[in-house]
Image (cartoon, rainbow, N blue to C red; front, side, top):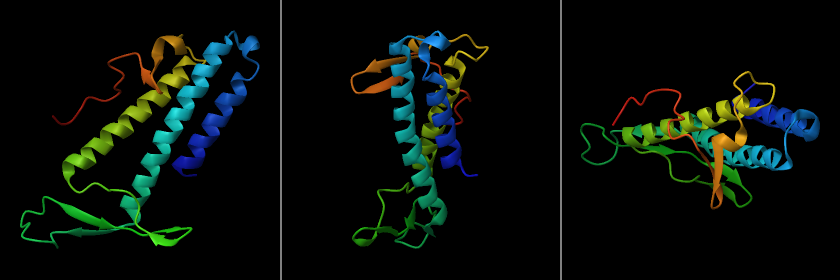
Length: 155
């Protein structure tokens, strides 16, 4: 199985597990927090795997355009099928720094998924979802400033 169906299965299992919330010792607010956090993670995860697919299945041009003799930038061409025919997906990374930013987003998504799992009542971590995530305007953010699971490798 690929990452997308595995994530969707995990998300469905968590939501099913939380349905009889009173039997799990959770308040309605805690269940809503789980749901909100999982919805937000799902959106980010979808964007990340679509970007990954565009990078993987696109045609890379490195050192082809202009006087870029050190190949500091690259271009990726990828067409996707849409209701209007072929289209080019959103902006893709063009250099190593942008790829590293994408790596940071992946690490953050992984850390959030691990934290959600650790907050489940069946976890031995004994974490509470309300202590780990807070609603900041329109999104859920990690309440822990050092939620990183791996040390940064750059800047």
